[in-house]
Amino acid sequence: MKPRSGKFSMPEGYCVKCKAKKEIVDGVEETMKNGRKAIKGKCPTCGTVMFKILGGKATPPAPASAAAASAPGKPPATK
Image (tube, rainbow, N blue to C red; front, side, top):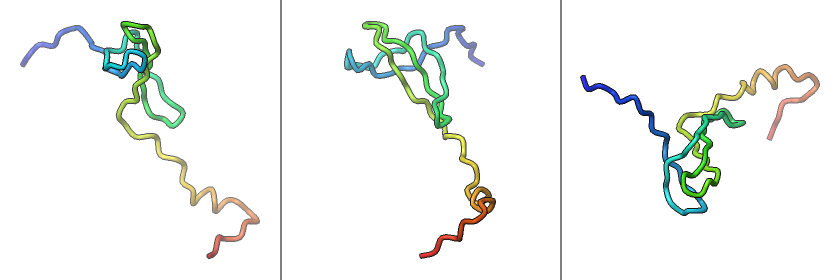
Protein backbone atom coordinates (compact mmCIF):
# COMPACT_ATOMS: atom_id res chain seq x y z
CA MET A 1 0.00 0.00 0.00
CA LYS A 2 1.31 3.42 -0.96
CA PRO A 3 1.68 5.93 1.90
CA ARG A 4 -0.25 9.17 1.59
CA SER A 5 1.43 12.52 1.80
CA GLY A 6 0.18 14.82 4.55
CA LYS A 7 -0.41 17.72 2.17
CA PHE A 8 -3.99 18.46 1.09
CA SER A 9 -4.34 20.30 -2.22
CA MET A 10 -7.18 22.71 -2.76
CA PRO A 11 -9.30 22.26 -5.89
CA GLU A 12 -8.76 24.32 -8.99
CA GLY A 13 -11.16 27.03 -10.00
CA TYR A 14 -11.39 29.55 -12.83
CA CYS A 15 -10.28 33.10 -12.06
CA VAL A 16 -12.37 35.51 -14.14
CA LYS A 17 -9.88 38.34 -13.75
CA CYS A 18 -6.76 36.32 -14.73
CA LYS A 19 -8.77 34.23 -17.25
CA ALA A 20 -7.00 31.05 -16.18
CA LYS A 21 -7.51 27.96 -14.03
CA LYS A 22 -5.70 28.28 -10.71
CA GLU A 23 -5.60 26.60 -7.34
CA ILE A 24 -8.01 28.16 -4.84
CA VAL A 25 -6.21 29.66 -1.82
CA ASP A 26 -7.78 29.96 1.66
CA GLY A 27 -10.75 27.91 0.49
CA VAL A 28 -13.73 27.35 2.77
CA GLU A 29 -16.42 24.77 2.06
CA GLU A 30 -19.92 26.24 2.12
CA THR A 31 -23.44 24.98 1.57
CA MET A 32 -25.54 26.99 -0.87
CA LYS A 33 -29.25 27.75 -0.45
CA ASN A 34 -30.21 24.78 -2.62
CA GLY A 35 -28.19 22.38 -0.43
CA ARG A 36 -25.24 21.85 -2.79
CA LYS A 37 -21.66 22.16 -1.55
CA ALA A 38 -19.23 24.76 -2.89
CA ILE A 39 -15.77 26.11 -2.14
CA LYS A 40 -15.09 29.83 -1.82
CA GLY A 41 -11.56 31.22 -1.72
CA LYS A 42 -9.10 33.59 -3.37
CA CYS A 43 -6.94 33.62 -6.48
CA PRO A 44 -3.26 33.24 -5.54
CA THR A 45 -2.18 35.84 -8.14
CA CYS A 46 -4.68 38.70 -8.00
CA GLY A 47 -6.71 38.00 -4.84
CA THR A 48 -10.08 37.97 -6.58
CA VAL A 49 -12.78 35.83 -4.95
CA MET A 50 -13.09 32.41 -6.62
CA PHE A 51 -16.11 30.13 -6.27
CA LYS A 52 -16.39 26.49 -7.32
CA ILE A 53 -19.53 24.35 -7.10
CA LEU A 54 -18.71 20.81 -6.02
CA GLY A 55 -20.39 17.63 -7.18
CA GLY A 56 -23.40 16.26 -5.40
CA LYS A 57 -27.14 16.55 -5.57
CA ALA A 58 -29.29 19.04 -3.74
CA THR A 59 -31.33 17.72 -0.85
CA PRO A 60 -34.71 16.45 -2.05
CA PRO A 61 -37.67 18.80 -1.46
CA ALA A 62 -40.52 17.89 0.87
CA PRO A 63 -43.20 15.69 -0.73
CA ALA A 64 -45.73 17.90 -2.53
CA SER A 65 -48.58 15.37 -2.21
CA ALA A 66 -48.64 15.66 1.59
CA ALA A 67 -48.71 19.47 1.43
CA ALA A 68 -51.51 19.49 -1.17
CA ALA A 69 -53.62 17.00 0.77
CA SER A 70 -53.47 19.04 3.97
CA ALA A 71 -54.57 22.31 2.33
CA PRO A 72 -58.31 22.63 3.16
CA GLY A 73 -60.72 24.43 0.87
CA LYS A 74 -58.79 23.97 -2.37
CA PRO A 75 -60.55 22.01 -5.11
CA PRO A 76 -58.43 19.48 -7.02
CA ALA A 77 -56.83 20.74 -10.24
CA THR A 78 -58.62 19.70 -13.44
CA LYS A 79 -57.91 20.25 -17.12
